[in-house]
Length: 114
Ligand code: AMP
Ligand code: ZN
Image (cartoon, rainbow, N blue to C red; front, side, top):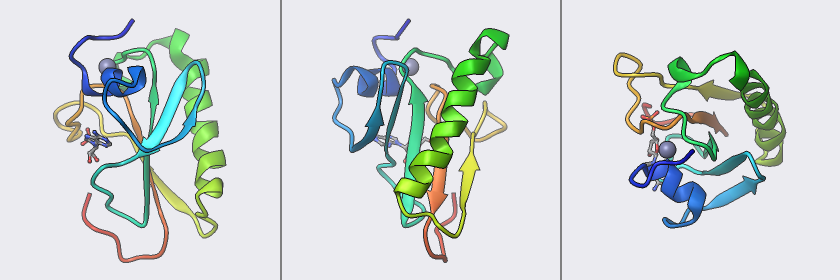
């Protein structure tokens, strides 16, 4: 299920352009529009899930896939010295876009504040 007016659902449908680095039937990875590090991309499920807090045991294969893709894409993007993985979740987690996304940040420091 996707939402008509959700920013990341719209990006997943191609209604809003994004700088894609990976796509398959389940997930999409694209560069963050306001990068806080030399490498900063997001991985989202194509189906709408509000946040990590709204996932269920049935989503665990998808969550595992997103983390495995984090490893693969971070290496592909040149993060050979490591990277940071962030999932802002809900209001107190500082989540601004209410569609689950994994931030992957890497490259030489210093980085900007998240
Ligand atoms: P969060 O605060 O965890 O919800 O992060 C949302 C992220 O989405 C921020 O880092 C934004 O810079 C990023 N963002 C917002 N709009 C777009 C867009 N159209 N394309 C790519 N990234 C976006
Ligand atoms: Zn959505």
